Length: 96
Image 1: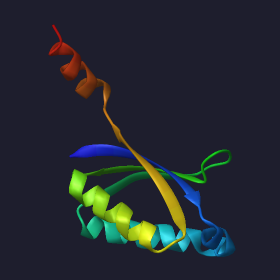
Image 2: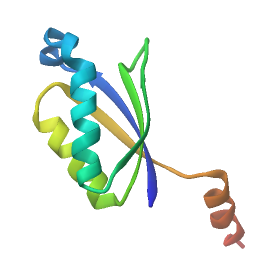
Image 3: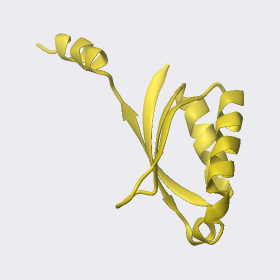
């Protein structure tokens, strides 16, 4: 399973309905689990991003979950594939 980091910002709609954000996060977790995606961590943040998630799942499952949540119009996400130090070491070991 791959690990992803999602950097999330509220849209105008998401801010208008910000009081529902923790309920929406719970709904996202349930939907994601149904697709085979585990939400490893979730943090509400101050600064450039409003929420940071770490997710585990296949490329297709994570992409589907992101598309589903994005289509609701409350958030925009920038999702990054993340590699553990062990995964990075394995890649580096393949270099000449």
